[in-house]
Image (cartoon, rainbow, N blue to C red; front, side, top):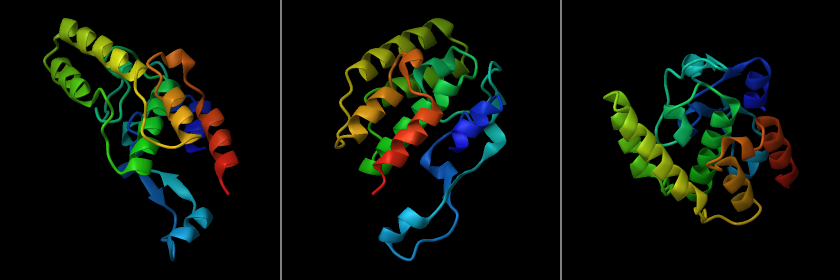
Length: 166
């Protein structure tokens, strides 16, 4: 919901990850999590849609983040990886090492290397089968689709997640 709100105002967060999601209050026990509000923090990386991205975490960033301007689908991708990490307690996305290499290429302004790594990352993501149960698996697959135009909106994700709550 926070991302949908930001996107509606013309901004993207650009650094969505578990470390930037906070609990409004500490739950008494795990079953109390259903009654706790979550907050999206660390807005220092937020930028206007269409502007260059100034900060990201390569572990959660979509491949196109190294080649494109800020777009809402980038946040949806990062939220998809975040959801995967929260469900599995590990970040073993199939393109993780490639994304780290793409970041290294990006920092040295090696455009050809960045483009090569982005394409390799997209190929790996296209065949990724996240090891989580349905309905989360199909949602994560859509959120992390290598084609940004096929990703759901943040509002769509929020609505779908709200239907999954017991």
